[in-house]
Image (cartoon, rainbow, N blue to C red; front, side, top):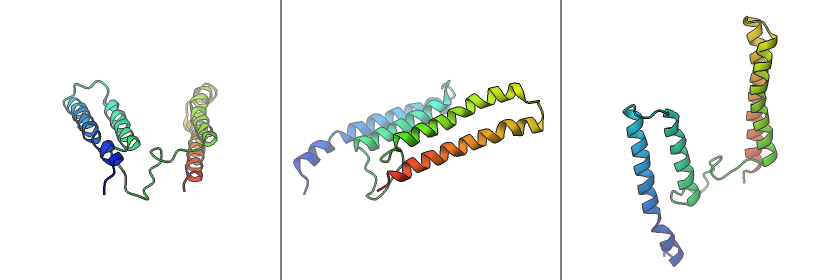
Length: 134
């Protein structure tokens, strides 16, 4: 039997879903007809809408479903290490481009540490999410 809280909380889900559907349809239409100057905006807005719908409870995932970044966040220390590792790519690449020759070995010297930084970022992120799983 539905309680008063369930009924009171359920009425606003319909307008939220309608507004999100209209916004998503509008962005998709502008993106398909080429009038959108930023095609990545559609993806970002749709992900933000999906997150807001799940976070507010308008869409409830089935019990037992764990969606990273929706209902499981990494620990702050692991997230900061992941962000730092990722940002090191943008520090290393311009510095290394000035120091190595423009050749295949030079590209390997630049890209190998970038791959290590990216792998480290994914490992830190994975560890941070894995520690918070129930």
